Length: 226
Length: 138
Image 1 (cartoon, rainbow over the protein chains, first blue to last red):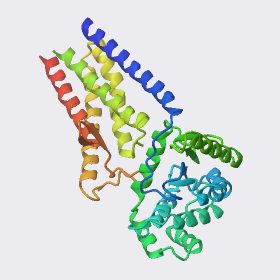
Image 2 (tube, helix red, strand yellow):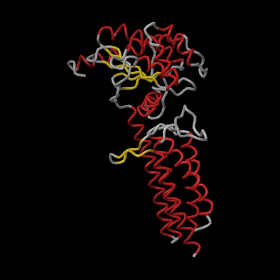
Image 3 (cartoon, rainbow over the protein chains, first blue to last red):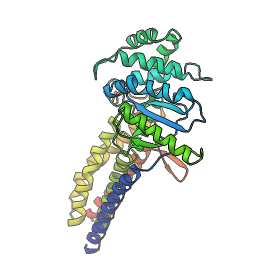
Image 4 (cartoon, rainbow over the protein chains, first blue to last red):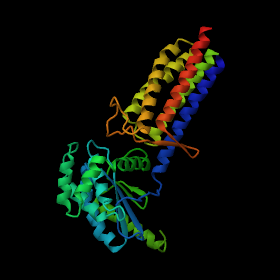
C-alpha cells in the first residue's frame, strides 16, 4: 500500500518535471535561428541569394492581406528582382472555411507538377487578397473558380475544380499549419515572417526593409558566407 | 494483487494521457473529433483509477470499465476508418478535421498510427482492470 503511494507520488513528480522541461525548452528554442524546409512551397527569386524570406499566410487573415499588398511588393522590387533575396509563401489554414482557398492556392502552384509555377500562385493569392471576403464567410467551389478565372487566364480551371472537389491539397495545408505551429512554439499568428530562419515580429514595411538591409550588411561583413 | 493491478491500470491511463497531451501540446498535432471522444474516455480514468489505487478501493474498477470499453470501441472504429477507404458508416467525423488522415508516431523507425496506440492502451487497460476485478472477487 505504502509503496504504491510512494510510486504514484514519484511518477507524478516525474511528469511535472517533464512538463516544466518542455515549457522551458520551447521558450529557449524561440529566439534561435531555424532551418525551415521550403521544398514544394511557392518560392520567388534565385536560390543563391543571401536572404531567404519565408511567410506563413492564412487566406482569410486581414493582416496577411495588408502584408501581401504593402510589404511583399516592396521586398520583390527592392531585393528579389536584384537577386538579393528569395521569398517563400507557405499557405496555412486555421480560420473557419479558409481551407478551400489554401488548397486552391497550392493547386494552382502545382498546376504543372513537373514545373510548379510560383508566379501563378502569387497572381492568384494577390487577386484573392484584393477581394478578400470577411473572416469566416463560406465560399463555394464555383466562387473560388470564378476568382481564379479573374486572377489569371493561365489557371487551368478544370484541374483546379477537380483538386478542390477531391481535396487533393488538404493534407498538405494541414501539414503546413502543423509545421508553422512547431516552428513558432505553438503560437501561430499570421503572417508569420522569418528572415534567414529568425522570426520577425514587427511586420511593417519599414521594419522589414531595415531587417533585410541589416542581414545583407551582416552577410557582406562575413565575406559573403551565408 | 488487485491493488497492484489498480496501480498498473492507473499507470497505463496516466501514460496514455501524457502521450496524448504530448502529441497535441508539444508536436502540435490537432486532435480530430474521434480523437477527442477517445480522450474523453481516457483522461478521467487518471483521476478515477488514481483515487482507487491510492485508497486501494476496488470499486473504482466498476467506474473505469465502461469508459475503457467505449474508448476501445472508438479506437477500433478510428483505426478501421484509416485503414479501410471511406469507412465511416455512422458519420462520426467531418471532412475538415479528417480523422481518416493517418498520422504516425515514430518509435524507433517504426511508424505507428495514433489510433493504434490508443487501441493498445485501452486494451491493456481493459485487461488489467479485468484482472483487478477478478482478483477482488476471490
